[in-house]
Length: 312
Ligand SMILES: NC(=O)C1=CN([C@@H]2O[C@H](COP(=O)(O)OP(=O)(O)OC[C@H]3O[C@@H](n4cnc5c(N)ncnc54)[C@H](O)[C@@H]3O)[C@@H](O)[C@H]2O)C=CC1
Ligand SMILES: O=C(O)C(=O)[C@H](O)COP(=O)(O)O
Image 1 (tube, rainbow, N blue to C red):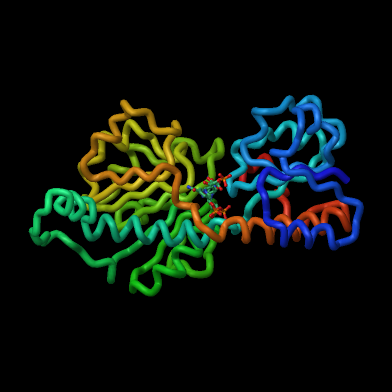
Image 2 (image 1 turned 180 degrees about the vertical axis):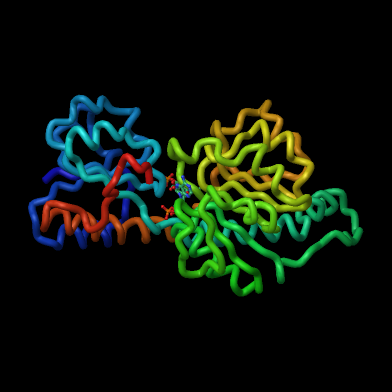
C-alpha cells in the first residue's frame, strides 16, 4: 500500500506505523521526485494539495485525510464519485484554538492594544476602561469540539455559556442552546459572541446586518471558524457598535491590504493563527496513526466524514 504524507510526523510515529508489520510504503510528499509519482498512491494525507495535482489522474486512491479540521477545500465530487474515504483533523486543534479565543476575549476586555500603544510611546498612563469577564454571557455560534473545549476552559471565569447549533439540541458544557431559527434572544443577550461554524452553503453569510442589529452595543464579536459566516460589509458598517471585534478568518485570505476592516480602531486581526501550537504534530500523528492502522486492517479509517455533502 502506497501512502503519501504531507507532514513529517517524526520518526517515532513513522516507526510505529512501520512496526504494525504491514507492507506499507510511507512517502513524504517533499521526497517525491516528480508530480507523476503521486498518482498510484492508495492513501493521501494532504491539506491544500488538491489544487496542486490533477485529480483526474489518481488510479488507486481510496482514502484521503486532510490535516485541517475544516473540509471546505476538499473536492467533494471526487470523494463521492470515487467512493473514497475522507477523514480530517477532528480534535487536533481544539486546545490551541480554545486558548487563543480566551486570549482574544481578554485582549478586548482589558484593552491590550491601547496598553501596547502606550508602551511603544513609553507612556505610563492608567486605563480605566478595563472590564471583567466574570458574570458575562458568552455565546458560541456552533457547539462543536472547539466551542466545547473553549466553553470548558471559560467556566473558570464564572461566565454563563450559550450556544447555537443546527437544531437547538442541548450539548454538554452549554447552559442554553438555540437553533438558528429561534436565536433572537441569543443575539440580544450575549456579551460575547464567537463564530465557530464550518464553511458550508448553509452557513454562508449567516451573520449579517440583521444579526448585528440584534446585538447590544458593547458586544464583543469574534469570528474564528471560517470567514464565509460573516457579511464583511455589514461587519464594517456595524463596527463601531462593538466593544471589540476579533477576526482570525476572513472571506478572502490573506485579508487584502485595502480591506476597510483594517481601519476599524476596535478590531484585532489575527492572520488565521489561532490553531498554532508546538503540540500539533504530536496530536495529528495520533489521529493519523489510528486512522491508518484501521484503514490497513479493516479497509476503512477509524473515524471519517460520513456525510460529505453536509460539509463538515
Ligand atoms: N481558525 C482556525 O485556525 C481554525 C478554524 N477551524 C474551523 O472551525 C470550524 C469548527 O470546528 P469544530 O468545532 O471542530 O467543528 P464541529 O464540526 O465539531 O462543530 C460544528 C458546529 O457548527 C454547527 N453548525 C454547522 N452548520 C450549522 C448551521 N447551518 N446552523 C447552525 N449550526 C451549524 C454544528 O451544529 C456544530 O455544533 C471548522 O469547521 C473549521 O472550519 C478549525 C480549526 C482551526
Ligand atoms: O484546521 C483548519 O480547518 C484550519 O483552518 C487550520 O487553520 C489549519 O489548517 P492546516 O493549515 O493545519 O491545514
